[in-house]
Image (cartoon, rainbow, N blue to C red):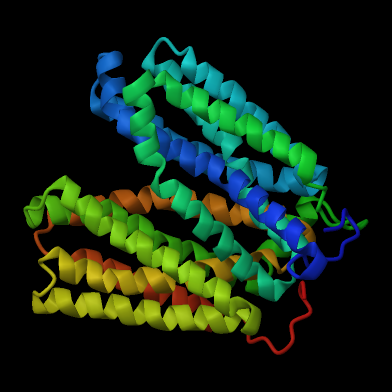
Length: 413
């Protein structure tokens, strides 16, 4: 790792192995603050509704507005990290998370808690956007996708146990203990950043600045194509998560616990996809990995569409079996298209990462509602699987029609 020399630091072999492990821990930790904080509270939602004598739908706003906070953080913190550096913006964001967590602890009304949760997300999601920028600062273009997959894969393991941890904290100590835990974790991550993370932002040239960065990015076909490919791929997750519960529980007559178990299979497939991506990334160009992912994603979504037309996947085993193929492939598409997007203008990696994350989360909130409508208003799985196939086609279209063919691109090698 080097400071702001403008050269990517390769920290993966020989004497740098220890540094690489420390960096992995830091990237996972900063990337995990927001999503882990989100899922820690989910088991306590019924308790919040009872405590504040409110409907569960109102308590749910502690989750829905949290997503809004994550989206807003992406578009704000990314450009700030390009201007002021990764370290100060990360520390400021985590400080906001700590203050907001304390606010959650002392909240006396549900609206107060909802506002504090929004601020908690605004600060916590700083690590999500800046971790991608740091990866681009430190690693060559062809290694970025693998590193993103590695960070996501490790973080997912922690994320999977977050609801259980939150439930245990609430049962043993009450719901406010969850926010004490979030504040403590945020302080710990901030201390690790202060002690172990050097400034990685690339040196800024005279023509650099927010307007220049934005203008350069929005007029770049590679950036627009890679970004939209990543964002559209992420919507497959949102739409299936929105519609799946209604189809499995209401139409197929299964319990919520059984739905949770089936949904875990798609998360597991996504995790395995990320681990495969880590293995293949050092030996293949990111465009090649995107195309492998797109081919498998199209095949899996077409299989699910066929099963819907034929009437086979009215049982969870067929529906989720085909969706596992989609999610395995989705990991290849998302991590490598994200790598392509943030590599177009490396000195503006924070701005590029922020724009991508903002679109992903902002559009995702709408698409998940659309998925819920498809699952709740139709007795067949066909509308949902058709929408997933359409999103898969749209991803491929971005690579075919928007991203130009690349021989040996000069961008961010």
